[in-house]
Image 1 (cartoon, one colour):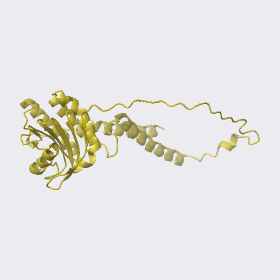
Image 2: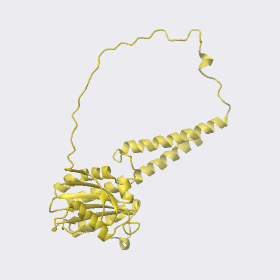
Image 3: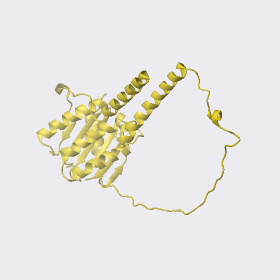
Image 4: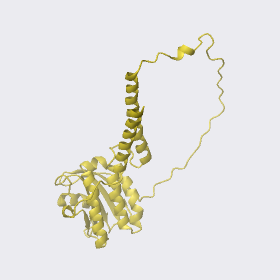
Length: 264
């Protein structure tokens, strides 16, 4: 019995470690390996804020093998924010794994007060239109209030977090995901323990019929009665994360991407 408890404890321990690893990166990136991932052409950040965000983007992005990029612009040429993002990707050729590789880009058009999020390659799969919409909804209120550093931190952290979950899973339901992993681990542990118990002793031959008196057992009385039907209405609240919606596309260089755009 002690051995069975040890097996269950080990399974639960590794499940919790896996859940915690989705919340925080495992380690830091050396200063000599830092890449430029923050392009603040609009001058929204101080030097200290810029440095901290660039280090943060490097650390979190390394864990997901994806460049997490911030690009701000005053858009003096009055380009569409989606086109700005696509041209940035084609011209700067970002990508953690290779030129024009895994990357997610947050573009801010300060002239028209618009933002666009795009995921390329691995990020296109793990940060699809729906997940990018969620990220945009989280950061838009801070952008509207001018809390740019806070919004960019949330963007980096949320992109990192969402890429830790398989596509199709709701990444915001943390408790469900943790309990699901625990349930799977316990299920595996139960199977292991059951097999051990099965092979460790004789088979159980006692069943329901051992104690049941077939002559006296049975349903004595059954009655169903319909009373009424009740309909309850609930008002569906609209999101306040800024106007806009999802929608990816393809750059002039032929790179497809997921996308979400909106105003702030």
